Length: 197
Image 1 (cartoon, rainbow, N blue to C red):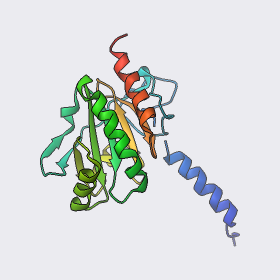
Image 2: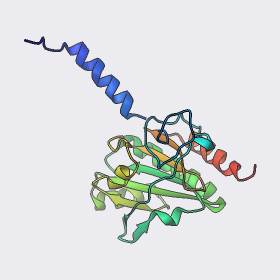
Image 3: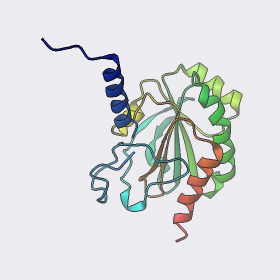
Image 4: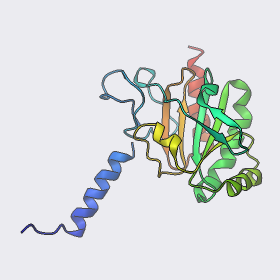
């Protein structure tokens, strides 16, 4: 008869599993350039971006904005994109969202699009959230987390989370947890500077 696992053993195993889930890469091994579509393996360090030769294409996705307008990810093409997963029930989102809005206001006319993905939420609560915080960029209403599932392996239960896409539609960064405005601004500036080199 096998011996039951100790509480410590179970906690160590759970920690290891969580570390495996909390990750951003591009599919394939880390030493070779990506050959397929994006697959999440670990988060990107804050205020940094993935090296250009290690990026993989973001998946296509579609949905409906909070106001009921259809949305397709093809509308992000040729711009740097900031995709932020949030919910009106999420306390860190209340801190992060106004900072994202401030960055958006500063860079929107430089070829940077912001898109919120409202997850596990009720539409009316989400609309009240964006109105109260003065958010000017659109959000997809995604109560079942379908957009997160399109990004293979992305931890859809980590809210807030942010994905940055470069102008070629490749995943350039994935941040899990709250992102400060100055860190987001740094990463966006890195992506905008790539066009000037």
